[in-house]
Amino acid sequence: MSITRFLAAALLAVLPLAPGSAFAAALTVSLTGSFDGSLAGRSFSGSALTFTGTADSDVADDVFGESHYALDTLTVTMNGMDYTITEPVMFFIAPDSTLAGFADPDAARSLVSFDYAAANAFYGAFAGAFSSSGGALAITGARSLALSGVDLPGAAAVPEPASWALMLAGFAIVGGTLRRRRTVVAYA
Image (cartoon, rainbow, N blue to C red; front, side, top):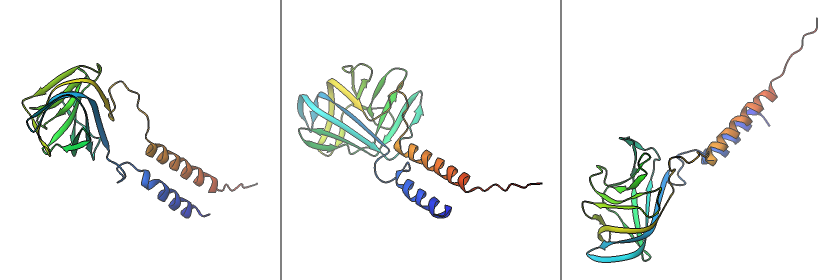
């Protein structure tokens, strides 16, 4: 097999694994728990809710030591029904204070804010409800929160499969070029 064909095959094998491919969102954050609040004027108490936020970019803006992720969508699942937040929203996480949550892009209003180090520490929602496909949604209390999908400060970084694939492809290319290199020995 020629080196050109080998390189072309390696490139075609690795391209779908490259970061930013169209297979999945770059960031998916999920918060589950038991919440109190209201939806479209109807109160609920102790209801199981799941907040799922997705973004095409996993790059965060650093604002006063907090990481802010602009979300493309935020869906709230309650009683088997999905409600999409219809206004801009971000996920924020503050490593110094262990505060995290969902808020508007200016951080003037918070839909949910909590202490991710203490599973039951709910800080509340600030300045009213958020618009959703099912009506105005306001969260007033929470119990047993669980956050997933985001790297919390202090966690060890683990390379993604795409990084491993690119590294192995690089080693294969270097190995292939070294193997093809011929040395000429001149005898005197």
